Length: 109
Image (cartoon, rainbow, N blue to C red; front, side):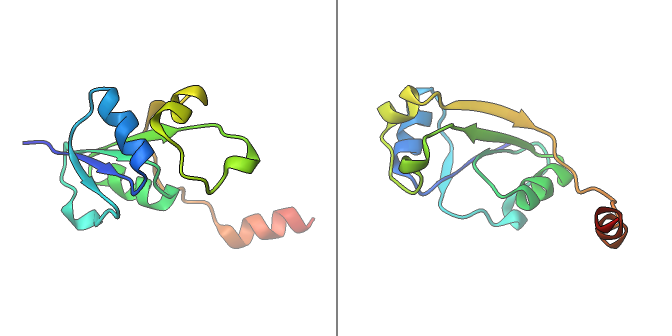
């Protein structure tokens, strides 16, 4: 059976997701080895970890939020998250095969 992983240590985000009707297994840190094909991982992950989720044929749902600079690092309430337009967006992320050294050379020219 597929599992919903809610990855957040922020109580405001957890409360916001709950108010939207999302209940799952809440964790502060994702152990990628626990994710199985068909699972759903919801949160704000670094792109490399989100790519690993997708490589396992699980779904990554990003908790998006645009906040002003002065609120970065501040614990937001569920209400503040609503005010600043919290939204869930599905992403299918994969690591690119770009040659980093070739890119560096290209940018140097």
